[in-house]
Image (cartoon, rainbow, N blue to C red; front, side, top):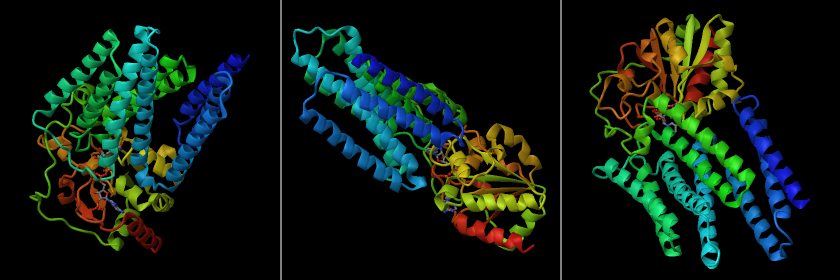
Length: 465
Ligand code: NDP
């Protein structure tokens, strides 16, 4: 009876995960989908605590609920307080914690096995323990480095000599070591060494990645965490861990493939450490000529009398929290007969889907968000492209400079528009840390200032026309 009830809890949990994930595919239903998944997870956790085994001592209950309380308070407060622009770091950190949990499960379960020398663990159990340990640990240490890179603490890729060969050797070494432990039964000492080796590999795997390539790594680490949790599910024969892990693992893998496509990088490059191409961001070599800027009144006239305007949102839009005023600008222009669309680059911002989420917050019609492949052929017939806080995603170096760290990445071809307006605060570089020739294009005018403030002035000016 108890077991049946628990299985029902897990079934409810699994179904809510799938329904929730499906709902997250659309900005309108995403919030509800997240909530439904969380409810399912709560049911599964409570089911496990109260129905999984026989009577449990009050001390154990105290420890479990104490840990849940601490985790809930920390998680709730950080998620509540975090600014939208810091969200990617938070997601990276949470992902790392998931990897750490999977690794700890493996360490603890291996320790249990060692304490019962009469019990002979099957190969299946050993594989689940060792694979969960390796993948969870890589995800943990890699995500911590990703966190430091996203918050700017580690803003330069660190590349040891022949780092790709070195990384590949270490990766093969870690997995070979794991296979040895599975084959021989290992010891706590060997498993601890494997844990340390996997931490080192996770760090070495992530530190050389720079330029604009972080999105691929973030989604790959995400899929690692899912995979590691799924191994935990095998280990405990726990359906909900298995379903949850497989969903995260497969969603992360699909996202990685989408991101690879967006960055035009083969997946093998990511896994075997040749990622980033070897080109290092060059800084401040301004050979580009002069820039010109535009006043708010000239820009208001230009936009008001245009037929077609494309807005390119980027990370700076999120920093400035200018999503509401940009929607106001769009509506104002549309009222005056201007056709307005948003061009969405798959890696704009600092997390996959960042621009979609941001613009959904201000109720921009989803139909107005046009993906890169679809909008690129339209730039030629665009009167004004207004680039707001975007930089790398419109940088022509990706197309014409083989020595650039972003070379090969598809971009929004804003340079083809008749007039190019760039709103940013200064001539500073974007995430990839490189110059952008687009700013020196004779068709480009810089509209300097914080996006929210500058666009508010622009809206006010257009209203006077
Ligand atoms: P970028 O990081 O290339 O550029 C953002 C620009 O916004 C900066 O040049 C900055 O210039 C400007 N800016 C900052 N604050 C403001 C503000 N308040 N008002 C106006 N402008 C502002 O952004 P993109 O979106 O073009 O590209 C995203 C980059 O991040 C890519 O390199 C991508 O690979 C990387 N990345 C993406 C992830 C993802 O999953 N989407 C994850 C990790 C990295 P200034 O300081 O002069 O104002």
